[in-house]
Amino acid sequence: MARLDGKVAIITGGASGIGAEMATMFTGEGATVIAADINQDALDKISENENIHGMKLDVSAEEDWQSLVEKVVNDFGKIDILINNAGVTSEKPITEINYKDWEFLSKINGFGAMMGIKYVAPAMERNKQGSIVNLSSVTAQIGMGLNSYSASKGSVRAISKAAAVEYGKRGIRVNAVFPGVIETPMTKGLKSSEGQLSQINALTPLGRLGQPEDVANAILFLASDEASYITGAELAIDGGYSAM
Image 1 (cartoon, one colour):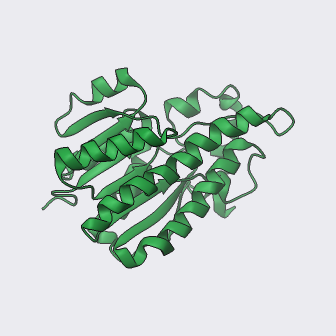
Image 2: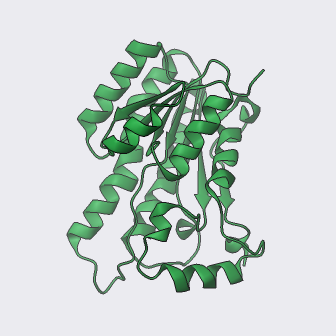
Image 3: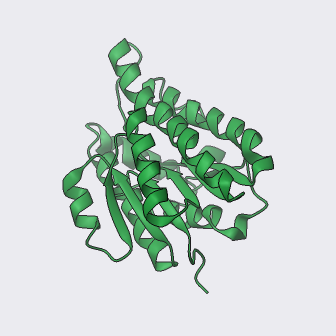
């Protein structure tokens, strides 16, 4: 039996990068995956895969979440798994940050995860079971980057703990993962990435940068019934960087 047989999973930011890696991995383990993303071209491409259904979603728009959850429940009957993966980043230092920068990152990284829980948890509650995994960042655990990105990912950390307590007695598990630097289109696009990535790589005990499958494998475990007694947990996926 595959690890996610019969499960219905929503993966935000599911059409590219880590999200696409998870979508492919989850279907290989028997799940039906809704790859929710704002990029229509990427959605069209990933929807060519069997059992991956691309659906448009702006995670910062509450009405989008409401419509998405209603459609998924109507089409597939339930929601077993939610992966709050969609996110944006920024390198702006504190001396250059203004309110618009703060608002942009917070509404996608923080508010987006909160709205996912708000609308998906009631659907899970009807079946008295579910698994939610939120993607935070190593920057929410250590002093790394005094900027809007770290702050927004710190909110994901707090949301995850509170949601684990709120929904545990209703059969819903909520965990958070904290990736280090993972080689994706988002990190490759950072203006100062070449020097920064080399420096981080040199300081990482495992001696390499992370790959999307490193994150996807860890999340697959937390999403599956193998992790049935794990909630409120924080899992660093950073090659040991945060242990330094």
